[in-house]
Length: 112
Length: 112
Figure 1 (spheres, each protein chain N blue to C red):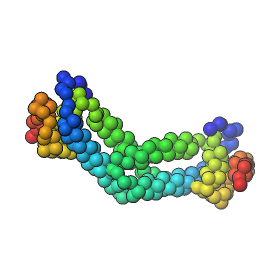
Figure 2 (figure 1 turned 60 degrees about the vertical axis):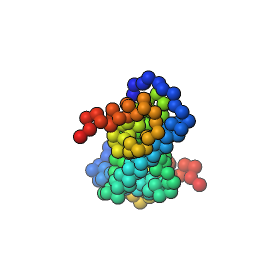
Figure 3 (figure 1 turned 90 degrees about the vertical axis):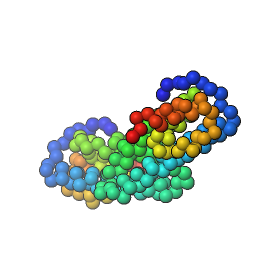
Figure 4 (figure 1 turned 90 degrees about the horizontal axis):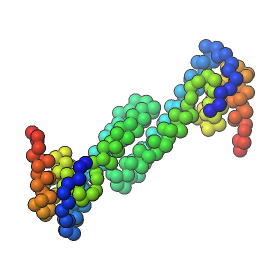
């Protein structure tokens, strides 16, 4: 992810970002867990356990790439998480305007 | 795993080997599955899903290394599988003596 112009983050803003970030991460991990559980239930052969491993490998790569906790890219990360419905706009209320602009841009961008 | 002197395999022997090999593989995958299920139940945080991924990654490397289906190494593979209790000696009955010798050697080797 590209770096953005860096703005200072207040303690209050850092708290908001941390909370929104963790909420999205938790929800996304929950959905991965639910899917893995379903795959286990649907398995017809014990040897299919490796399909679950393949699935987790793929998701882990995506998650590691997506959840980048640097303040320099945080607005882009949060915008993407809202766009993917892991969190809502309300979760980033309280961030300063210069941080909300890229977030809102990402949310509105080619949304249906 | 080192190559051994190669002996011819009759159709009947190939069938015995295939059956014993598949039985062990299935049982070992079942045990991995059971462990993964238990880890899922014991999880306190969705983010711990990656511990299951780490576990599966490690087991997969071991399984891929262990389950080598070349006839040149088959006696060593079957001997190891018996030693690890995935199959029993009865599962390899019918193999010729020159194949049973390395199997029995592996079973007896520093066994308790």
